[in-house]
Length: 289
Image (cartoon, rainbow, N blue to C red):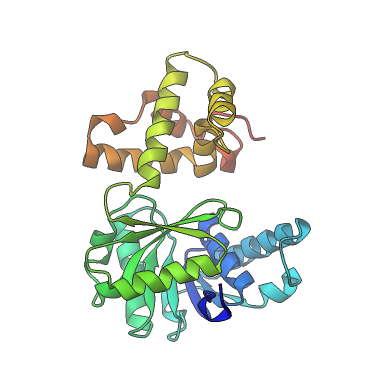
């Protein structure tokens, strides 16, 4: 590959939502050299987002994954308490707020009103219809899905989701940014669950049913897929990592869109009701304490 064909990343990036996913997205673009503004709802939440990014950079440095000192990379990240504080000249704004359509639509329309006409807007949704999220936008041709995976710094995949209205040049630009991050892009049409959530949730739900039926315990089910099929993480560990509440919400959406094969098992509903949400709380299908 000659130097002219090496993809480059955006110079200024906005990230709306500073939770685990948003902080991870901010981290990888800052490592690439971009100036990043992370928006959270209020000053306290914004500072928590800053700490998440700093912690992620510290861990990356400990693993030898940073070319620059973490404090240098951290200086590229700013936090803000409102969408109106996004930089107007941002090349990319990624929305990474919770999987609630009304919340995503609200922040996306607010962001479009702040940034320039050439800014690419993206949603990090893992399952919601991208076209519906972009329907209220004035410039739907500059909007698409960028589905990052958790943990963002270590994951090698970004699912690029194309709604019907997106401009082909925007898709190619985003694919170049993904490659500049050192990740691989998979381009899919906007359909329920895209490719990854549809397949991943189906496997996870069947694993939960097997556990529910007493076919095997959680450790055995995960080991079977990790050792027998070379999955890097079994479906129950993966559900714990994603969050049982998140997986339930995706399953409910796919159930309504695609039918009974995505019906959430009772065991999943019971664990969510009991607050056993996975690694983030220390207990899910496995004990993470």
